[in-house]
Length: 338
Ligand code: NAI
Image 1 (cartoon, rainbow, N blue to C red):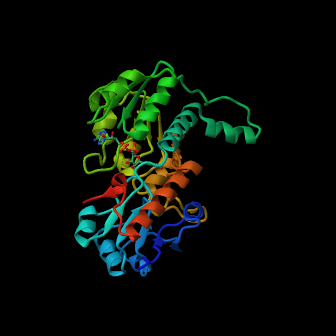
Image 2 (cartoon, rainbow, N blue to C red):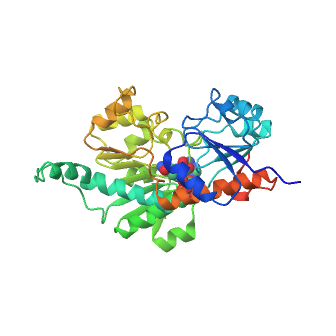
C-alpha cells in the first residue's frame, strides 16, 4: 500500500520561506499549506489535514497548541530553526508528537552577521551611509576603535561562537571564552583562552553571546553581569533576546557605561520582528527607548538570512517531513526529545 504524500502546514510563512521550501521539495510528492500567521493554541486548528506542522522561532508550541495540533491530526512538528525554546518538549512527548529541528544550517551566516554588526556599530557605518547620502561629509562623531589588540569575550563556543572567535582572532584580537563544555584542542589551535564567565565579562572590550536560551541562560546579561563589564565595552547578542534583561540594559546605556550594543534578537521580538510596522504605532516602550540610543544597532533577527542557510533549512525540513510521513526515524541530530 502506498503511503499518502506528506502534507505540511507551514506557520509564520514569509515569501522567502515559501520559495526555499518549494524549491527543496521540487519533484517530491508534498502538499503545502502556507499560513502567514504564527502557531499558537488559537491558530493550531489551521493544521487540520496535515501530518506535519512546520514552525519558526516566534511560533508558540506550548501544551495547549500541541494538544490542538494533535487533535487536528498532526503527528510531526518540524522546526525550521535551531533554537527550540518555544516548544514544550515534555508536552509533545506526552502527546506522542514527534519534534524535529534543523540543528545547523549555516553557522557561517550567523557568525558573519555578528561580525557585520560589530564593524557597523564600531565604525558607525550606518551613520556614515545616511550622512553621505545627504551630502554631509563631516566625520564628527564617527570615531571608532581598532579591534586589533583588544579583547573579545565569547560566551558559548559551539558552532557560531567558535566561528566568531576565529574571525576575531583574524583581526588580531585576544579572545577569551566561556563554555561549560570547553573545546580545549580547538582553543589551542586558534590561540583562544577559556576562563570563567565573570572573568570573560570583566576583560572583554567586545562581548558576544552564542548560547541557547534555557532556564539557566535566561537573563544571563543582567544588572550584576553588566556591572562587571568594562566602561565603553560593546555587547552583541545574535542568539536569543531573553538572554539579556532589557530593563537593565537600558539602565547601563543611559548611564553611558556601555560603549555600544548590537542586537539581532530582542526579548519581546514576537509580533514585531519580521513584520513591517512602519505605518503603526510601536507599542513596546523598551524597544522604542533602545532605538533612541545613538550607540545601539538593531537588526530584525536576520543573522540566519542567507541563500545558503535558507536552502539548507528547507532541505532538512523537507527530509524530516518525508521521513516522518514514511514512518522512518528522523536523522538523530534533528530529533528532539522531551
Ligand atoms: P550550539 O549548540 O552549536 O552552541 C551553543 C554552545 O553554548 C554550546 O557549546 C554549549 O555548550 C554552550 N552553552 C550552553 N549553555 C551555556 C552557558 N550557560 N554558558 C555558556 N555557554 C553555554 O549553537 P549555535 O549553533 O552556536 O547557536 C547558538 C544560538 O544561536 C542558538 O541556540 C540559537 O538560539 C541562536 N541562533 C540565532 C540565529 C539568528 O538568526 N539570530 C540563527 C541560529 C541560531
